[in-house]
Amino acid sequence: MPKQIILAAHFPGVNNTSVWSDPASGSHIDFASFVHLARTAERGRFDFFFLAEGLRLREQRGRIHDLDVVGRPDTLTVLAALAAVTTHLGLAGTLNTTFREPYELARQLASLDHLCAGRAAWNVVTTSDAFTGENFRRGGYLDRSLRYERAAEFVRVARRLWESWPADAVVGDRDGGRYVRAADPGAFAHHGDQFDIAGHFTVPRSPQLHPVIIQAGDSPDGREFAASTADAIFSRHGTLDEGREFYRDVKARLARYGRTPDDLKIIPGVTFVLGDTDAEAQERAHHIRRQQVSPQTAILLLEQLWNRDLSGYDPHGPLPAEDPDVDADAISRGRAGMYPDPVGTARQWRALAQEKGLGIRDLIIEVTGRQSFIGTPQRVAERMNHFVQSDAADGFILVPHLTPGGLDEFVDRVVPLLQERGVFRTEYTTTTLRGHLGLRPARPATRAGVA
Ligand SMILES: Cc1cc2nc3c(=O)[nH]c(=O)nc-3n(C[C@H](O)[C@H](O)[C@H](O)COP(=O)(O)O)c2cc1C
Image (tube, rainbow, N blue to C red; front, side, top):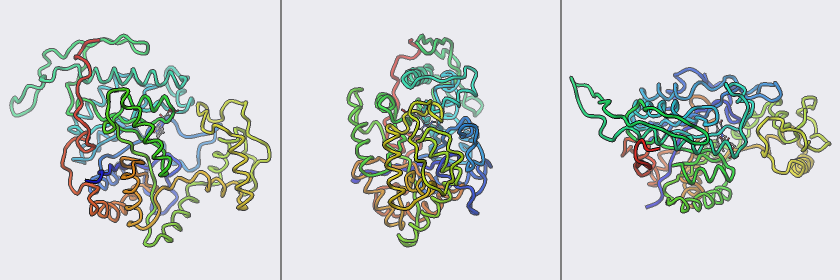
């Protein structure tokens, strides 16, 4: 039997992919938009709906990205509302461990898992921007190693909280309604380097016990964290070769933690552009890329490599002759390491611009493109399946460029082809997200309540 493909739907929003200037683009904040995308995904029998997290408008040295029309509304609130209008679709929320507290977040996620009857997932991120921290009480930021130390302890504590009620605490019916005996929910105490907490958890065990844990973070620390802890990884490795290399690297780390390759699903975020012919799809893709990179975006992205104020440059003119500033603090704070060799990359970009006669904006369109699957529905279905069968991924988080209709065409035209090939479900056969993903039921890692 061929590998089954995992499919998830990323709600477009604040990222370099979304296009709001297109006449077909709708609201990024009306609930109706979230409902449309979620119901389309469920109609297509997708595994889950996915929300990223952005706790600050994207800006660079005080200039807000002109392609962002709205910030992201609160993840858990949106997912809780979607629980009421969907029946099988998993609901995955990106929620950082750097600025939150485990007791509060564990409660919220357990509550969501109850409300949607076992469909909740948590994409654990550590956040990449120092300036996000300025919105929070303690402000500031943590070094990468500390961020992951905190994340690992955070998830450990959350799991212990989820396990702290006895399995039989839900005892049955009274007057037709379920009730919970708050007999002995299990005292809880944790004394660690990052958190020192004690008390009683207030939410009984949820249907999945542990909501599905997704991890997004690509450094060696991030990969190790995923291998030790996560059920799935949201990655950015969209090409076949990069995908295979990442897949091999991450799956090889699992044995160290007594886990098997099937215990961790690898699901890169990818884009797609369809057309009646391959040529038409390429043309649409080119048009979309131009919509995604405004003249201002081009300068902001160029600044991220050059690490200098380039606001005086003409977006249609040549690249700066001077080299990137490698000594100054990173221009978008906390984002060090985006380009490991800025001077070398700048040289490559200059050579490419010269060779093809490109100005700044056209060059940025060329070098920052991330459109992964372009072509007829047949070609896209065939390529996606090839990626999965050749172990470059276990599935995909699709990132449409239009809100809220960006997934319609994929569900209508590509999903049936995947189903015909026998690599994607035609009906849901399970009710929980763990079930959809083929993950084993979560088992308590510790004896409840023992610190
Ligand atoms: C595919 C992907 C998606 C991410 N999504 C988010 C997000 O929605 N919100 C966020 O704050 N950080 C997000 N991050 C950032 C990660 O949490 C992490 O902070 C960042 O990648 C730096 O860690 P690293 O050096 O291990 O990659 C994402 C990272 C990746 C690779």
